[in-house]
Image (cartoon, rainbow, N blue to C red; front, side):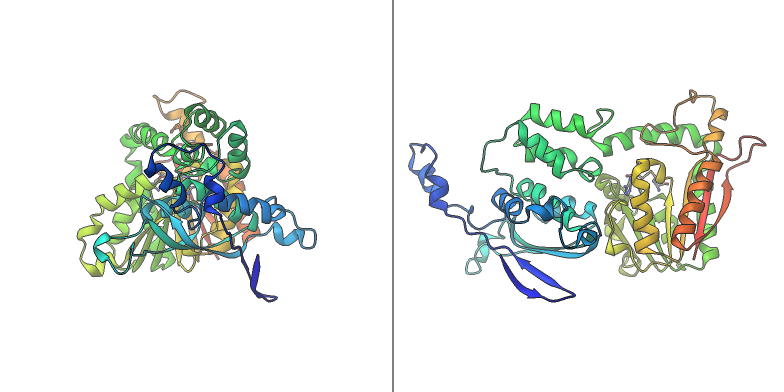
Length: 429
Ligand code: SAH
């Protein structure tokens, strides 16, 4: 361990890992063919960030990884600006997978490619990348993310995987893996594709045995649309949100949980919205949005107005700062209630746009849907649906804690006792 910079405001901890490739090869029973022998001695193991680095992290940063600090316990509990530099990260799938793994956790990811050999450009690119991750997270979380995800990227674990690996995965994945859009890929690779272990891990990660959140959301999106279609509710929601945005005077707008881009399309068609960003935890939804908005063929001036961001609302994300307004249209009900506090901290506490517009179903209206059995939500992925009182109580609490005012508006035609199908809160500073 080296500390090349150690000042009151900034500290760099450099972990240098020296791996002895011969030592690695020796204990194993050797295969009989020469190529196998060569591979044991000539390989990338000493050079890339792999499960060896995870083992070193767990050994060297043991107490930090557990979230303990004797001298500064309050700092260990706090999200602080951190940067991780990984000079050699191997990803045979290319930079895309690196982004897919780290961006949903709220990191700004920078990736530098390298030629396999600068003297022989025709050999193409190296599968190794220099990566920097920047985010505002707890040190404990950064270390846990690295601990789990480095071997997942490297995809070659150096030791045997047993039952206690499932425990490790769940322990170090606590608080983030469950909501990670690629939890299945992560579990599968971390556990070296041992089916029974992967099944065990995924079952413990999900309440309802639904392993892939993308799948669940997509499959059930349809049900909700069918239910609400006759009311033209989707269209009314978009128009009401647009009106609130215009009224706020926003020119830079963030669409949080943008899904397949219904609102983004309308935002793009109004030049007053100069800069637009759509963020979603589902990579698949973003790919669909990218295709539906035809981003590849937009004229440059239009294309520059819009960015799609892969990320999760439960993690602080520097990319979300600096916008006039943020919208979360039909998104909060997809988030586990205990994680709403994180959303509050991310959106209202850290990103702090001038205006925040949130829409969510009004559960009192559900009684009026003939096809919706009582005690069922409009969408299977909904974690809750609130009455007007419940939404207003939550929103007023957020506004009070975070220094915003909030006003409420109904969306869709209003029933005298059940209210309107959708409710909206407009928060301003
Ligand atoms: N706003 C869109 C989509 C609503 S569906 C519209 O009104 O058409 C809810 C969306 O929220 C889904 O695309 C889902 O992937 C996304 N989502 C769920 N949890 C999220 C989280 N923690 N962070 C970001 N997006 C999330």
